[in-house]
Amino acid sequence: MPPQHDRRVRSGATGPPARKRWGQHFLARPETAERIVDAARLSADDLVLEVGPGDGALTRPLVLRAGRVVAVEIDPLRAERLREEFGGDARLTVLTGDVMQRTFREWLDAAGAEGPGVLVANLPYNAGTRILTAALEVPATIRRAVATVQAEVADRFLARPGVEGYGYLSVRTAAHATGRRLFDLPPAAFRPRPKVHSTVMELTPRAPSADAESLRRALRLASLGFQARRKTLANALSPAGPRAQWERALEAIGKTPRARAEELSLEDFVALARAAGTA
Image (cartoon, rainbow, N blue to C red; front, side, top):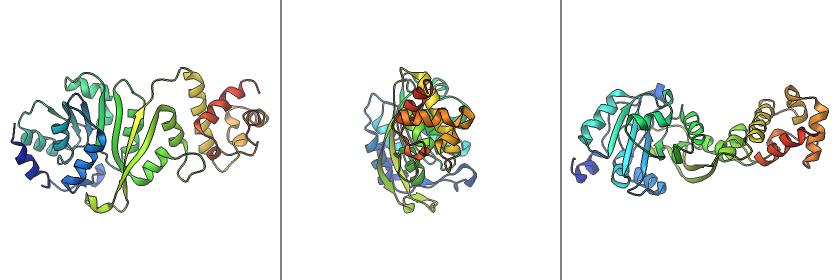
């Protein structure tokens, strides 16, 4: 294993240019990576899945904190550089590929890693939403996620009713996880510098709902409602039933028949789905 001080020296090194098609923006300073790893609250017993390690800014402190790190890198050149740097360190397995081409469980199995893991990642801007929404739905594989995404994406994950950014992603997230914003990062924290600010957030998947059918129906209603968010819900939900039915159901849960999707929480959509069955 390379000496620990060698990795600290290399942590500020840069690799090949970032690839725009992969949405790559790498952490520019070792202290930023340390702050993210601190926020992940890892112990020597933890298994970590790192998506998009890039030049290894997060990988180095992760290997020092966690018991095992499985890193999935889409860029074959960067993946090989990390393997060479860590020289067969048993605590790190670097796999090459698009993380969305397999399930998270399949990636961990490919590394011979058992048990649920903590996802820690500086996610590519063009795939962050897809990666995190997939992670939220497999609590048996991903028990917590600490990830860096565009600030406006974090807003949409974490927004509550009536707040800018609130939409279907917010409702879907609330259905599967609890979330919180940890801290924001300026463009100067990355190379190349993006044009937007970023946010480090934590998402903790929930156990599966005891009433999975009501939750499934609620998410379908939320999806329909936000697809036509300029309409009242009673009109937007017409593909799922007559307007009068939805007006009665809205009144039954204490909402005006003129209510729109952005006014309802996840709990409201669940109540609406149940009320519609008797309206």
